[in-house]
Each structure stands twice: as structure tokens, then as C-alpha cells.
Image (cartoon, rainbow, N blue to C red):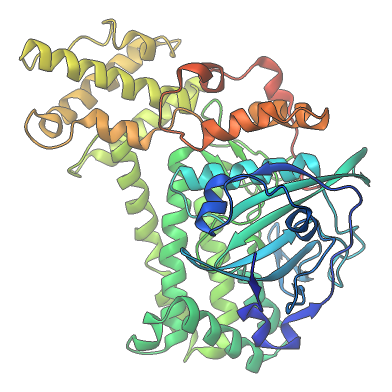
Length: 502
């Protein structure tokens, strides 16, 4: 792995601290992403030689590069937290790959000047969750940082109990966060703020330099657009981030920092996946507003570079229309609709209220609806007639069985089918079910699936992790040998508690 000095390092000493990672004893491979490795031009299997294992565990540093930890600040749970920074992450350098330049970062590599009393370590439990979810989100088509691998060590790490240490190797074009801008703006370091903004524009948003008006306002507008699209994708797939602090928001619109995340089981708009979030600030339904609030904080941080505050407000204003439009596009795809019309939002909202009232399993509902539509289309083609089967019929019964009050589903179903028919006419392009099956995954990383993989890995058995990883890499495919991974969660899953502690 031929690392180069990171572009981020060129910003200067005010942005980072150079230091080496803290070695871990007896490292071993835990997880390896063949797809991420292939995108980097690396072997699709964990290398047998010891060199890369030692580098990605923090025990050796490549020639010509010095790892760095970056400084940033941010708002946590709605309150200004002051200086934060890479408390347990080190940027090793950049890797030039067929997919473009990627930063390579170790998470869990030991203390840094920004650890704030922490040990700088990550535990195997949280590292496996981040590894699996990063790659699962990528397979779902949701912008995210990637995870090349996880390495483990018998070194003890104390959290609520003593656990073993691990390191995740993370990849992204940049790990710059909203909090980087907040840090320099809050401290009055406007020259550094401008240098950072210029760097981001030149490297990632060159179109902002050519835009009419202030380029930094154009940057804020571009980040607003990406963030609106990102949170729409989260909401559509039922993903709860759990810790949407400004320091966990990517300037590139990537899903960043997988802590107490969760994919919904039963649909509950008020669901809070983070045990540490006592106020419910980051509940699933609140995520779109929180992302806007975080963008507002970014706008405040950029004010020293803008002509006036109105420029910031103008750049943020489109979010209010962009997000609902992006979400409705994705919900229409889930419903098999290819021609947006008036009334689609009401049809979607009526369905979500129905799912909410009954706490219907979110992923299973959408997948069953997709499969039922596919079977119905097959029958229609075979019979060469346009008559639709009743919702009580054999194809639709598995969907109807999800509801304690199926007549409410019947009413909604009838309206949906009426709305769908013009879009699903034979000879009019792709069938509705094809759109639905591409938009409604069969398998997502539910908490209980991750928990089982973690327990087995802690006991030295990686086969469950590897099997789950393979299914998550193809979330829209039918896997006859992994039906259990697409089944309802067991009763004990409701007791799983995820917090910010690791």
C-alpha cells in the first residue's frame, strides 16, 4: 500500500498534530472488505504477509508519511462543546486509487492531543458495527465513508466492562467535518478558516469558484444540497444515525461516524437509538430538522467569509424544499411510481401513519410489498389482462398479515393500486416491481444481526460476521441460504442498548 502525504497536511500545523499511533500487541485480521480493497487496487483477501497487518493496526508507519490527528470543534446535543478533534483517529496518508484519491484513517489507534482524557482506543464491538455498517450503506447506495478492514488485539480496553481492542481502517476522499469550520470561526482564526474553505472548494467543489457571487456562499449551498439528499436517503431506508452532532457531519455529504446507529425494526417515527440521548434530540423523525440545524451552524461559521448574513440564509433556504422533494422521490421509488403526481405525498404519509400505528416492521413491509407486486405483474402478464388481484389474494396476503387491522391496509392498498396502474402498464418501460425491488432492500444491518456477529467474533468465530457481510454487500438480492437474515428480529433485540461509550 503506497501511501502519499495527505493533502490535508498541507493546510499547516494549526490544523493537526503529527504523531505516531500507539502499538497494539498480537494484532490479527477480523474483517476485510473485498470490494473496498479492489477499489483501492489492493488484494481482495487479507494479505498473508505481516507488513500491512502491522501498518493497519498502528504498529508500523509507512515510509515518507507521518500520521496526523486533526483538530475541530462542534455542537454536541445542541450545545457548544468547544475544542474536540481526532481523539482516537489518525490519518495515515492518501492512497491514489482507480476511484480517486482516498484518505486512509485508523480509528482506535491510541491517544492524541484531542483525546480529552480518553484512552484513544476502540473496542471490537463498536469496530465491527462500524465496519459492517459502512460497507452496508455503500451497498445500499447511500454516500458514506468506507471501511477497508478491522484488526483486533487481545489488549484490554475498559468501557462499561473490560473488552478487547480493535482498529478500523476508514476511507474517504476527506474526513473534514462541519466542526472543522466551527473551530476556526469560533476562535477568530479567520485566515485559517479561509484557507480551509479554499482547500475544500479547490479539491472537492471547484464549481463554487466559478459560480456567480461569493464562492463561500456557493460552498454552503452545495453542502446544503448534498446534506438534504443524504438525510432523505436515511429516512427512506429507515436509518437512525444516533449522534448527529455538528462534528459528525461531513462537508462532502457522507454518512460519517457510526456510533449508536440503528435501522428501524418496527416503524416508530419517535424511535431513539442512542441510549445516551435522554432528550430524544436525535430521534428518527427529527433527523431532517437536525441536519438543517447543523447546516445553520455551518452557515454561522462561514459568516466571516460572506458578504452578510443574508447570503448564508439564502444558501440554506433551499433545504426546506430540497429535502421533502428528495425524500418523496425515494418514497415514490419504494412505491413503484415513476411519474410524480399531485397526491403522492398524501399517499405516502397515509401509509407511514398506518405503519406507525401498528409498529409494522419497516424493512419486511416494503420487501413483501415489492415481491407481491412482482408476483401480481407476473400473473397479469400470464393472463394477458389488466385485472388486479384482491389484497386478500395469495400474493398480497403476506403483506396483509403484517397488520392487526388489515382493513386499514386494504383501503390504502386500493388507492395505491389505482395510482400505480397507469405507471405499471405493460409496454410502458420497467415494471413497478423492478423499481420497488431496487429501492426496498431485503437485508439491512439490524441491531440483533450485528450483535450475534459480534458475540461470535468475541468468541473467536468470524464465520457469522463473514456471512452477514456477504449478505449486506448484496442487500437487494434474494439469498435462499440466508432467509434468517431477512426475518423478524427476536424478542431479545428490543433490549439491545447502544450508547456513545465506545
